Amino acid sequence: MFVIAVFIYIRNYRQRKKEYLNEIEMKNEIHQRELLATQLEIQQATMQQIGRELHDNIGQKLTLVSLYVQQMLYENKVPGANERIDQVSQIINQSLQDLRSLSKTLTDDNINQKEIVTLIQEEVNNTNSFKKCSINFEYNFNQLDLGFVHKNMLLRITQEFIQNSLKHSNCKNIYITLNTSEDILWDLTIRDDGTGFDTTHITSNGIGLTNMKNRAEIIGAQFSIDSQKNKGTTLHIIFKKQS
Image: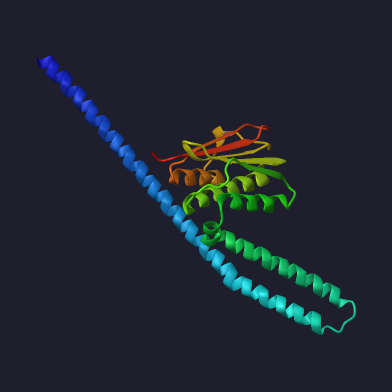
C-alpha cells in the first residue's frame, strides 16, 4: 500500500508539474503576442502620422510650388525657357502624384476601402513598372471577406518580401499566390528565383524577416520560410478558419 501511495503521489506530482509548466508556457505565449500586437499598433500609428504629414504638409508645399511654376510658365517672356519650365512642372506634378499615392498607402483608409486582391495587385503593378523584376499574382476566389488586421498583415508581408527580394536576391521573377479553401481562410505563398540564403545563419539583423514572422504570429498564422543558395526563397503563411 505504501509503494502504491508513493507511486500515485509521484504520478500526481508530475502531472501537476506538467500542467503548471504548460500554464506558464501559455501565459508567456499570450504575453509575447500582446507585446507583438502593441508593437504593430505603435508601428501602424506612426505610419498613419507619417502619411498625414506627407499629405498635409509636404503635399501642400509641392502644390504651391506647382502653382508658382505654372505662373512662371504663363508669365515667362524668355524664348526657349518655356520647355525647361514645363519639364520642371511635369516632374513636380509626378512627384505630387507619387506622394499622394504613398500617403494613401500609409493610412488605414486605403486598406479599409479596398479588397486584398486590389491592394496586392496595386503593389505588383507598381513594382512591375520599374522593370527590375517580373511579378506574377494569382488567386482562386472572386471575393475574400477580410478585416483590416488581416488585409494589413497580408499587404505588409507582401511588400516586405518584394523589397527584400529586389534588394538582396537579384531575382528575375516573383510569384505570389493567395488562395482560400473550406478549412483555410487564406493561404499566402510568395516565391522568388533569386540567390537565396542559408536559413540556419539568420541573424537578428534580418529585420525584414523578423517583421514578417512577427506579423504572422500576432494573429496566430502558421509561418514558414525555405531558402537555399542559388535556388530562391519561398515564404508560406496559412491562417486556418476558426472553429
